[in-house]
Length: 401
Image: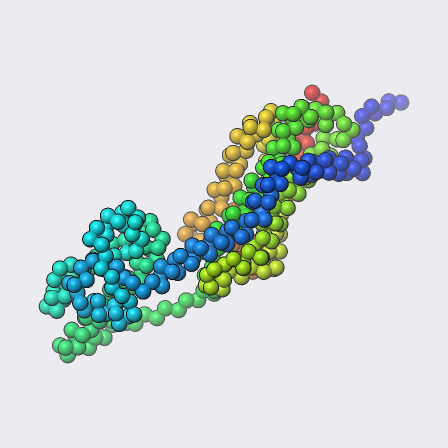
């Protein structure tokens, strides 16, 4: 009666082998000082650094918007305009003569109102003086103050026209045959979207780069050190090796996801802007939802990076091979940032992009439906299984050779 020389290991033996490999890779990753520094810097400091930078930017914009000074060139040409600004509680300050050049050199970061010579006299005669607004749209502070200055000049010209019509016995309402009332239907949390929309991108990048080192070390690193062959000679099956290695890499990625999400909870104390503090409501519910979205993505990214690196002979070669994957994951979230047409259903089927879209919804306080949660989860699970099957096949082939 024929006997089987290499019987397939029992499921319990595979699990024991996978657990042994997982423990080895996990403790190796924690002993690696570079991995630990990556985890600490990219995860624990993620929330404080991101919110501090965001808060500083918002506070700077608010400070620029609340300034009570207006830069004016040619103030003496329109004393009526200076009076109008004073009645609005603003002080008109004479701008430097080379204001345009200073704006180009970005040594002046506020818009400048240029009043042409004879503007007051021309306006009194019924003419239309041309006021020029000099600004640099590449400067956020300049752009933020431009709207206010533009509205002030429009208010002044409307006031002059109203007075002129009243002196001629004409109703000022003829200037505006209809009235426009603006009703903003957005909530406070939805208005925070443009401000906090970049935070999910940072978290995804932290998970991606945090897991990269462990993914390369457990695959190409083992091959470069010559320890992969010794590992394949052990009783553990290729599938058990793959599961153990992937489990350790995915655990590192999930740890980074957990720490980076939780770091936003205490980091809210660093927000300096009152308006940002009112808009950014991040509690335990938001943290739990973000983890539900991030953990499957961390698992699939770990498997994909390992699948790319398993065929490389050195860590350097594996880094170059993973560059395409990293670039794709880095660019996909930008689709939702720059897509003015809004969100589309197909975005929920694209890894990284789906998580970015849904995490932004969570930060805006919107509810997530079951299908919106299950579709990215199913895509991540499918990618993970496909990558693990590819890894097991490559190790099985290497063991035979």
